[in-house]
Length: 100
Image (cartoon, rainbow, N blue to C red; front, side):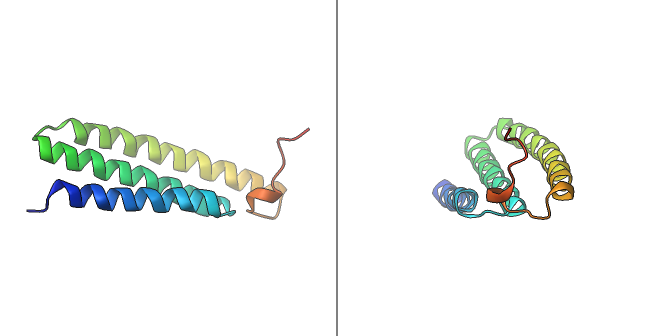
């Protein structure tokens, strides 16, 4: 049986990689992938605590987070495609459509 600390360590590493990806990457698609990585790290934490406490609440929260993440990915990808039609780049530094 794997102890809880191993799950939390893997989750912390995944979340840290996601934060680093959001901070260091300039491509919009890579930023969205990093956000999804952070959400999956949180899901791993929820499921680990749910298993440790013999409670199903973590699984329910994970299902809700996955639902929100799927909606976020669909809407985010639609926005990226709409921006990419106007500007031929996916670089965050070069997209300034919201400025006056």
